[in-house]
Length: 159
Image (cartoon, rainbow, N blue to C red):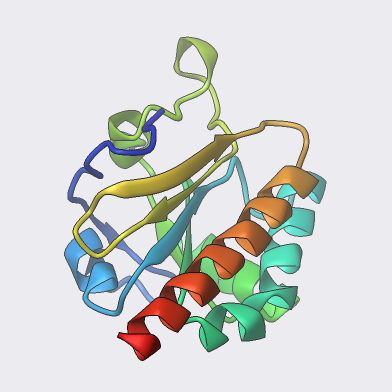
C-alpha cells in the first residue's frame, strides 16, 4: 500500500459511463480522495460509499473530489451509483492492474483491501489508510482530509 510521500502511479480506467479517466485527468481538478473497495452492493461497501456521499457537500466546499475503484464492471458501477445516489465517480479495474499497482490486492491475489488515500495534484500521497473491516475509519479519514484542506485553503487565501 502506498504511504505518505509516495508518488501515486498513473492509470487510466473506465468510469461508470465506460469513459476512460486517468489519474492526471482527476488531479487536474485538484486534490483527490481515492478509495479502493471490494465490491458494489455488499453491505460494507454500500455503507462506506453512502458515508462518503453524505460528506460530499463538505468535500466540495474544500475542493476535494472522491473517486472509488473496484473490480466490478462499469455497468455494475452505474447501477450502484443510481441505487444509492452517489455523486462521485466509480472506476472499473476488472483485471485489478491498478489495484495491484497501489498495493491493495487481497491476500494471495483474492479480493481487494479497503483503502483510502489523499493524493495532491503533484501525485504525492498526502495520507493513506488501510482498514478492511473498520469502515468508520474511512469516514473519519475523509473528515480529517476536509480539516487539512480547510486549513490549507485558509493559508492560501491569507497569502
